[in-house]
Length: 304
Length: 325
Image (cartoon, rainbow over all chains, first blue to last red):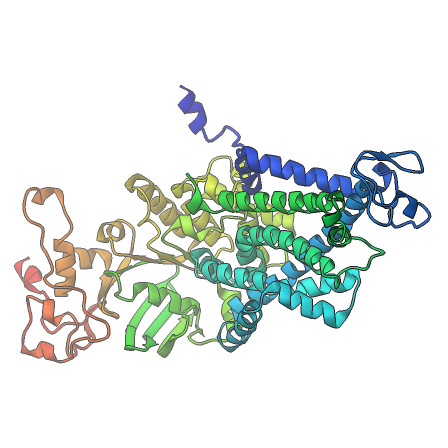
């Protein structure tokens, strides 16, 4: 008789939001859950870096060349253990990596969110306006996407100069087109669906149909592209810094740390480059795994 | 009874690369207050396009090229977009065929119903919510408070169509256009939905155009019927007159192809041939090539003929039945 109670319309139905359903399906995968956990830990470490590191690598009073190039596990002059060793200027690598992650994550997330917002609006305008406006916008997008993102970012940084704000701007310019293309493609599909026609028949205004009806239905692919592009923004920033055009030596991001250690690699002091490199790898891989799995969950066609 | 909607000589054509598709080519009909008009025809006969023409939702390359649509005496054919937008969902509502597709999957039922009210009236959210709840109760949805909080995927097809009907009635419109609202539903649910729609039109005095290809549905529901073929209304009249004494050979064929209990085991009547290509319609009567009563006169376009309050486009109306009575 349990069927009877289940079908009884008077029983309060458990109202499950699409987000709750997504969450339940996401945590079914062990790898994705692990990747998300690693990413959360990385973010927490970066956020709380000043309270959990023995040294502030930006404070020159705390950094001394006397500690330079110490292997992992050595004791510093100030008496704390450098578990990951130190770099050429005597920075504790563990501290430097956490501070570096702060910059890398800030740059990655900020440029990701800004590029997403800009690309989203441009893509929606293109999809809804159609005609000549759409053609012009999409040709600009095509033009931009025909250059590698790293080249665009490199040119922008070369023109703008060093600094966190400038590198964010450069990454936004390099990446907005990906979002614009994704949103336009999804919005075109959604626009032709019947619920849009039904909303028109209810006399709902154009702006409201675009932002309240079409946009939320475009969110799934947008979130996936957002995660993947954020990971790629982080590695792009590391690339630029490694090449010496990104962030200055005084604000060492992960890329700067790797570049600093590069000259010592051949003399056997592997830790100066390898540990920051591992931190970067772990960050980018965990974000990509989360993004990949989100795509699987959000795309009904890939479902078992 | 006053006329809510008067359509005369409506022509909606689509200008495609392959040529001009005359989807609606000279349609006239009137719907009065509280009346249900059945608009019957096969796929591609122009019945849905007629509905969308009334709402002004014909997308390019299509447009209304001729004719008048008078709504409560006001001309709304090719009216400005903001005037049409203020009518849509407010004075004229629409119910669609597939309830699985017409509700936005990411918005809750209450959000979607409330915005239909808030788009046309400056009332508080609380008032809008209460009206949405009462409307759901009116179409026979149990525990409407629960359903309002649900997302569309949590409702069954019949339930969703009830939500769509409740939404259509929210602003007490003067006219509802129902475009095959029961085609995607089970026969039992179909009967319930038809019953609710009929009850609500009688209660509220709303006029309704019920677009369908199913004569059986219209027979039990509509007051009047218009049969469309290739963009034209070929026969129009009171429901009992048309069903009992069809004049146009096409209507005769349609009625003959409905399975009934007293013809069990016999072959159903079949209309010969295929739906005409809308890009290459015959010179004369569009139904001519498929017609069993065809004569030489049928090479000309048949005029819109009258017989009492009935109208038909045929040179050889099917009078044999009447003569036999």
